[in-house]
Image (tube, rainbow, N blue to C red; front, side):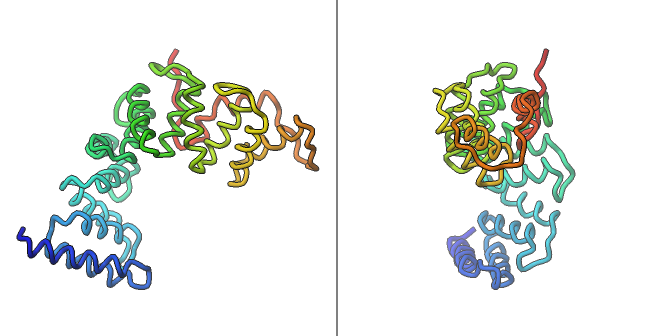
Length: 273
C-alpha cells in the first residue's frame, strides 16, 4: 500500500467523521466505502462499515454483513473489532453461536490490554462457556479489566469476592473495594451491594448513612432492592415515610441477597461441593 493510497483512505475516513450525524448516514457510509476501496487495510473504516451494517445507518441492517466486516478488521489485529466479533459469536448474532470462537477473539484483544475483551473473557470463564468453569481465570481477567476502570468488570470482581468460589476465597474487603469503584461510576447494581455492605458492616465499617446514600443512588435508577434499602434505613433511623408497601420478609430477603448472582449480568456460578 503506497503512502498516497493510505492518504486517500484517511481523507475519506476523516470526511466520513464529519458526516456521522444520522441525517448524513448514507453519505458517511459512502465515504467509508471509498476509504476501504483506497486501502483495504484501513481498520477504522472497516470497523465503521461494520457499525453501519449493525445499526442500519445509511444501508439496510445486515448482521451477517456486520460480522464479515468485523472479521476483516479483526484479522488485521484491530482490538475493538476482535472484541465485537467475539460478542457476535458469544451470542449468535449474525453468525452461529460458538463460545470457543468467541473466546479466541476475546483472547486476542485481551492480551493486547483491551479492557472490554478482558471482561468478556472473564465472563466466559466464570460461566463455563466453551470450557470448564474456572473462577481463578475469571477473576484474573476481570481484575485486568477492572484495573483499567471497566465498571462491569469491577462489579463482577466485587461479586466474586463477596460470594467466594472455588480458588477465589471470600473477601468482603476486596469486594467492597471493587463494588465501590463501580458504584462511583454510576452502576446501580454496585451501588446497591456496596450499600448492603455498609448497612451490615461487612468488609467496611458499619455506616447506615453511607448505606442510605448508596441505596438512594441505586433507587434513583429504578433499582427495586435499592428502594427497599432506603425504606429500611429510614425506618431504622426513625426517618419514617408514608408507604403502603410492606417490608420484605426477612428470610426471603436473605435468600435474594445470597442469590444475587442470579440477578446480574453474570450467570449464577454453582458452588462445588
